[in-house]
Length: 319
Image 1 (cartoon, rainbow, N blue to C red):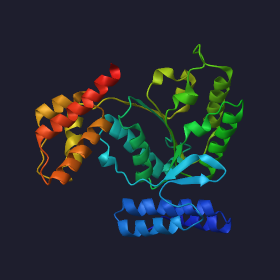
Image 2 (image 1 turned 90 degrees about the horizontal axis):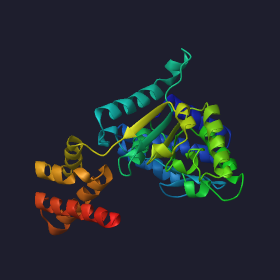
Image 3 (image 1 turned 135 degrees about the horizontal axis):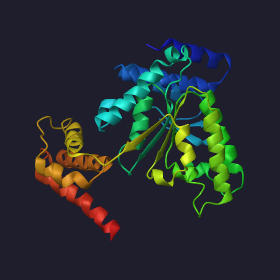
């Protein structure tokens, strides 16, 4: 059942007449229960949460005044994240330190909670944020960069302050995707003064932040980021294209749920080695849909053709 912390936060939200906070805690409890296998109870809690206030659905605005944050309650598992053993171990360390943060605080230490993830598109950066939120029973707040960055001088910094106010007041996992939009190197020739001010504001806010929330920033190219950022983060995770072993695990993770007799061939792994994690997952989804519609099993030949389709799509883009 809900933890003592959940109950405490629920009561505080009720006393403060904070409807949005109350909804957030209910969704946190739902995520916690789902993680512990209580799927029916978790669904009931989510249905109750939808009736609190006027917001409906699984994706929620934090509040009417802050359209920059979208909240979801993910149910992904660490076991579903196919990464190297080294990366998996570092994510487990983040989870372990958060769960034992009170123990660390007794010794004057703080848990890792400001994370930078760097890697090519489709290598699992967004999914990692979702997994961390789910494993910790926290809501995932995704920062909408198109609503954060504006052309008006000073407005983006003001919006950043609103986001960090939310980070402090509503515990969760806060995800800045495409982070180079605000974290670009101040020394680049094409950087204008306003963008430098935005970065300076972010550096100030993240350094001053002492909340319990987890902040995750993701970028496709760490070389674009200002060097001053790196010392503000507790951990930097470098994601790469999947290895042959990871490709095999991805195919088997996705396809054995539909066909438990499926085995990944060496030729299939070799053919798919130029695809990202996300592209391989799309290949698997397409194969499953095709098998369902044709009332047949998944074949290696079919998978090969779908992989070739993805490779051809990339080739046409490069041309």
